[in-house]
Structures are given as structure tokens and as C-alpha cells.
Length: 113
Image 1 (cartoon, one colour):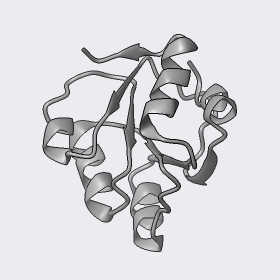
Image 2 (spheres, rainbow, N blue to C red):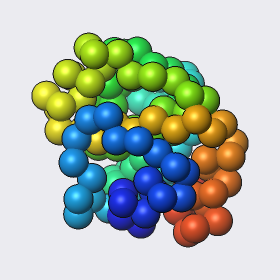
Image 3 (cartoon, rainbow, N blue to C red):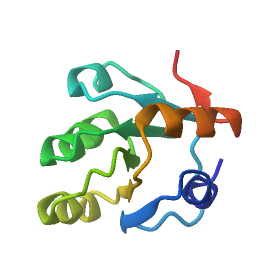
Image 4 (cartoon, rainbow, N blue to C red):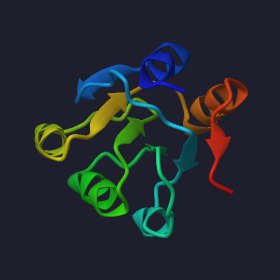
């Protein structure tokens, strides 16, 4: 799935990065960044409600290049700056984590587990 499709499916807003030509194959939902660090897969979307700089740092360490903030969480200016510095694409949506995951799964995005 390309990230442009994701925007349409979950009514997301891009707050950092450029989604053009980026492909994601799997998604992982978590608000526990320690769980995110256990994932070792490519082309992964992180779906989370944790809107803080630690989320960006965790994605950087886990080699994740796309993050979807759910539940109407807003990225701080520091998050946006750090996402841009690390070439991450950062999205926001008002829908719940469950709703976002369901829509993306139905559209063909695979789970990690």
C-alpha cells in the first residue's frame, strides 16, 4: 500500500515528510514504545496515540519511516522537526487506533503478527 492510499482510507493529514512513492506492507499498533522496539520488519507503519518526541526517537531506532497518530493526537513542533530531520512521514487522524487498523487491514495492509 502506498502512503497516499493511507491518507484517503483514514482521513489523515500529513504533518511532516513526503509520502510520495513510499510503500508500507505491514502495520503495528502500540502506545508502548518498548513493544515497538521489538519489531524487526521493513516497510512498517506505526499506528500510535503517543504524541511525543520519544515516538520519533523510537521509530528512528526501529527503522520505521511512517507514523500515524490516532485519536486526534497532535504532533508537537519538536516532533515535526525531528521527523523531518529523520526523513519520517508523520500523519494525524481523528479516528481511533482500532478504527484505523481495521480500515487499513481491510484494504490489504498486513499485521506484523
